[in-house]
Amino acid sequence: MMKCIYRVAIFLTLGLLATVVSGEELVVEYQGSGNTTTREFTVKAPWILDWRINSDYNKMISFDLDLIDGTTGVLIGNIKSAKQLGDGVSLFDKGGKYRFRINGSFIRWHLKVKELTAEEAKRYTPR
Image (tube, rainbow, N blue to C red; front, side, top):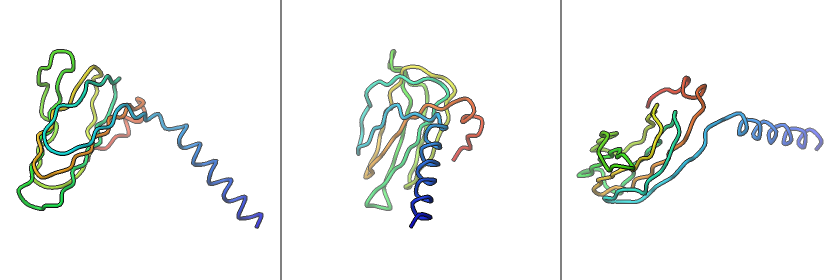
């Protein structure tokens, strides 16, 4: 019984330590379906966009995700265009005020913006 309690205590301590060591911080999260432009968000560099698209269909889906300047409304660029389900992460090295413009057909999308530490950004692997 004591070994079990000891193991649980170690597990909880390591879990809390991992949370404290990680500098990753959720800035904003959006989810929905169809077409929309998100609310403006402010983020510090470096940051990542963690995106995922799901659907009940396998064909005729489309997903276009654009990054928009939050102050001027000017298109900065396309982040992702997809005709199939999937997920991924993109790293950005410039902070600022932004919005996302999503054009989607027959999909549900989920976006998370997270700030990283410089050390985490160095270890980042695109996917």
